[in-house]
Image 1 (cartoon, rainbow, N blue to C red):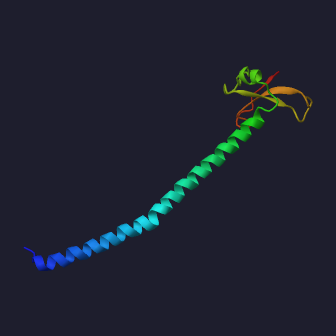
Image 2 (cartoon, rainbow, N blue to C red):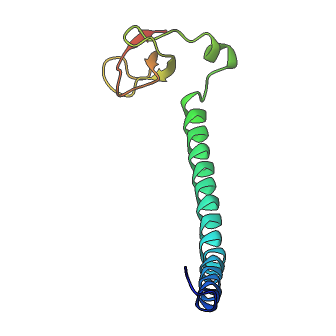
Image 3 (cartoon, one colour):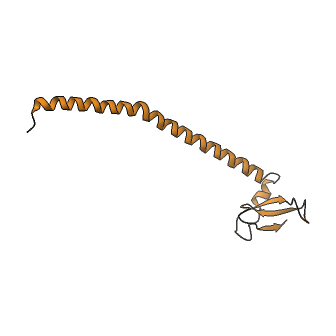
Length: 110
């Protein structure tokens, strides 16, 4: 059996060292965790903002009825967006283009 007079100082030193480690974790790690969470939330807000701007541009010039009545893509069955041809024989004409362009290149005439 261990000698109680030797065991008592050992327990006290162990407690002091453990308390020191707990204090270091509280002082250093908790603020770092807080900053990481704040940074992640900031990134999420930025990404959400970029998506909403991209979607606003995607449906620019379309009325609410046109957005709701948009046909489905013949290739992937996704939603289609009203677009204007920039090049080619049909330059300036409107057409329905797949919303997942350039992955899907499905089109329909207006």
